[in-house]
Length: 300
Image (cartoon, rainbow, N blue to C red; front, side, top):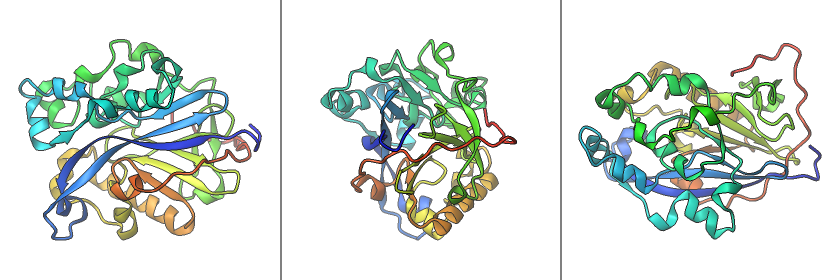
């Protein structure tokens, strides 16, 4: 891909939930804090529009009507306007569901996949172990883990894009350190996927590199706010049950904080940060194609 071709990034708020601020930042503030479900709409010059996650949808409300799934809605009250689903916001931009060529699924928590069924023609990009870690769970354990099987398309696995041979494992640019390896999703340097362990098995993040050298880093739930990154602040230990590994979560948060300190110009984009939601995201231009390393290690 040349510098003249560009990727354009937009952030869509697709519903939100409320949690006490102290649970996230351990700052003794117990007032409810608003956590938007952010969806990244990536306009790709050759692949068309691509989504990074899908946010909430009214399907979440239907899926949490019965027991035990209703406990999910009780513990995490959510708001979703049917006129503000990912699909509705795309249609307002003149983008049809069939125009979405790929959906990158960072992980399979309900607030990231509730809109998947709205995009039946999209290839679905995810790490297989991200799905396999949830499938054996029954309804009670799945609900406790934030997983609602009813939100998944029946043909999900048949539409999965296993990034071979289309994708190449690459050595990331030095300014991405301490993230050294990723997967070049389309082989053009536009989107590089990295694994962000700790929150759940197989969670994906994505680097977007601009022609002017700047970086966007979509980090999903590897941190919940940019304030968490700045302060290197883990959530309250009461949240341990939500993570596949609280220790690995801390390690990943530390790596993101190191990246932010080493590359101050980088824009860290958590999936639930209200401060990021309020930012105006300008167009991002794809930089020079990243050259695959001969010893690069694939994450998929």
